[in-house]
Amino acid sequence: DNSSTHVYNSTVYGYSGIRTFDNSRLSLSSSVSPTVLAYGDSSVDAFNCTFEEVVAWGNSRIDVLNSTIDFQVAPAAYSANFSVTGLEPGFIGYWNFLLNCSVAVAPGGLAANLTLTNTQIDGWSFVISEFSNAVISNSELCGIYLYDDAVVSVYDSSFSEGVWSFSSSNTHIYNSTTYMVASHQDSRVWLVNSTCNIYDINQQSEVYVCWYLDVHVVYSNGTGVPFASVTATYPNATIAESKLTDVDGWARLTLTEKMMNATGS
Image (cartoon, rainbow, N blue to C red):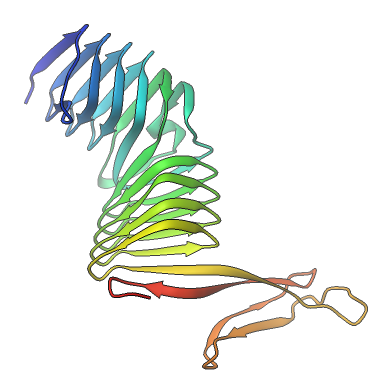
């Protein structure tokens, strides 16, 4: 509810760590905790602390100053649009989820107000739910977690932990690497010119593995043919993709190698 707690010069043990709910307020100073998870409209102020992970849900507010987060910091968004660019582990002078990621919250949506100041971050993750739409580019993340009808597009990035998709979410990953893809329920994941070490595919979820085919159409003298029609077909004569070349005669097709579900490829 509206409780208020102050923790100083202390160590919290156990995986659950500290969790705040409703309109509660928490102050932490010179302390260690495996996790801090904020829910609802709760608020957390942390100074000179060390955490394994910090996760902000709902409309919670978390301010972390002069601290260290050893594993990951993970803000959550419900029915919100946002973009992530150039995010990587390291020392953060100042970072705010709402401002740095240009978060736009839809009516009835929620987005955590997470602020990091003079803090060492060893990993980043995002929790994306309901009708959220996110674009991630040129970043080094631990992972992303998708729920409901969320849609995420990832470009030129890497995930040290992986991608977890649930419900009817859609994930599009381009020119990137991920350690694992774990899909559940009716979610769909597209890996385009991207690599993955481990697949964990469950229920009715599907994962599509696709690659680029760059085609150069040239005249007999070697110059490119602009606006030439290029079509790729599968062995059964089904059209895979068709495009026109650009002004230099190049066309990039995206072809599906395989679709994987819980029963195989």
